[in-house]
Image (cartoon, rainbow, N blue to C red; front, side):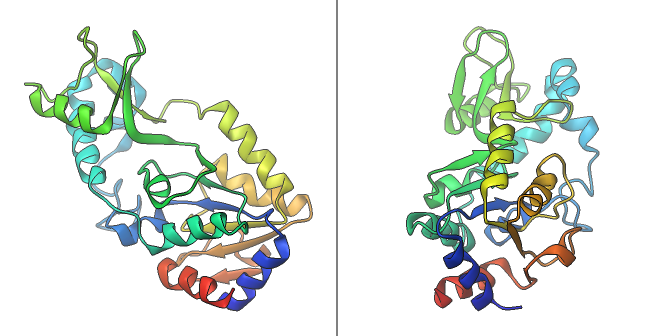
Length: 247
């Protein structure tokens, strides 16, 4: 299997290809994935104790002691060449849309236009009481100014990140569109995803059932490796840059 084969599939797809991305595409930007031993985000902390909606409601100080660091860590990261490659494929008409499980905002920063952030984004935080919303820079300022580290709206209610926390449902409209895109795609390009977190992990099955093909670019094994027309397991930046070079 080679980057040239994937380039050929993208050309054959005639603009109906859809990309699905996971944490692995952002690792080269300095953002750890979730379960890699030692470095994975959930290896050293129980997400149910810090990133669950019930924790936010019950104990916003504990919640924000974790998420404040997460916001600060993600806020200064920049898109890498893999993000840029997908933006270029979209701009050149070879990629219809990008569905991402990531909340880091790096696809937007790279220039992707048709983006479905099915797990939300750190770009803003909102008040669940009155709907007041603030962008990341203002949220960070409010964290720094708060004695307890909890950013609040003007009325004094804790702000919640515009991300899907454990215990929350994914946005229905985005999921339905993601399913529709997968069903219409002649090629689903999965980049940096373990393809194990549902319901998004079910998108390859939808594409395959509709007669489309699946291509996977990730270093780790996935449940769909044997069904993929192409599986590239090198560095995501190297692999996608090779695909661009082959077009």
